[in-house]
Length: 328
Image (cartoon, rainbow, N blue to C red; front, side):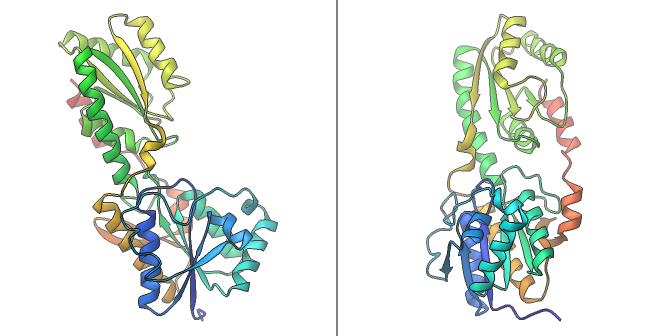
C-alpha cells in the first residue's frame, strides 16, 4: 500500500533551461492546492546531501513564471554518484519528513533519481527540463522552444551582416550529443547546411554543397553546426578547412554558447512546465513513482524511468530531407 504523501520535495538539476521557474511555481502551487507541504532543494542533489532547502508556498513563487534560470539553482553532484552521498541525502529527507521528490532535469538527473528511489524506497517523478530535447517519452522538453527561438533570433541578425558583406558564417549551437536545436533552428532560419552528430555530412560533401551554393548565385551562406558534430575537432578547425579549400569565401565563426540557456521562457515552455508539474504532483498523490511526465501528441503522458532511459530520441529523418530540399 502506498504511503500517504504529506510533503513533496522539488529540485532542478543539470544544465538550466528556460521554464524551470515556471515548473517550480507549478509544483508549489499544486501542492498548496492539494494541501501538501512543498520543500525546495538548492543546487539539485548537492542541496539534498547538504540539507540546503527552503519551504515553498503559493506566495513565495509569485512572479517567477517569466524568469529564466532557476531560483533553486542547479548543479551536478559528483558526491551523489557515491553510496555515501545518497545516504546523506536520504537522511536529510527523513529529518525534514519529505515523503517524495519531483526532479526537474535531464537523463542524468533521472538516472540518479531512479537509483536513489530504489535504494531508499522514496517515490520519485521526473520532469524533463533540458534545452537539448533529447529525452525519450516526450515530444518536447522544458526550455527547448525558448532555446530554439533564441537561436533563430541570433541567426536572423547574423544573416543581415552575412548578406551585407557576402560572408559565410559557421554558427555553433548547443547539442553535444543531439542535433535537435541545430536541425530545427537551421530549417527555421533557412540555413544552407546543417551539421549534426547524428548525420556525418563529411568534408567533401560540405565543400561540394558550398560550391554548389556559390554556382547558384548565393553570395552569402549560413551553416549551423551542432557542438557535437563529428566532421572537425571544433567549429574553428572546420572554418579553417573551408577557408583553405574555398578561398573565395570570407569565412566567419559565431559560437552562441550559453546565451541559448537564458532568457524569459516562451508561452509554450511556461505552459508545458505548468502541465507537467501539476501532473507530477498528482501522480505522487496517487501512489505512482519512478515515472517521467511528457507530452505526446499534445497530451500529458507518463513513461517509466526504465523505459525512458533506455530508448533515447531519434532525429527527424523527414526534417533532414526537407533541409536538403530547401537548401538548394
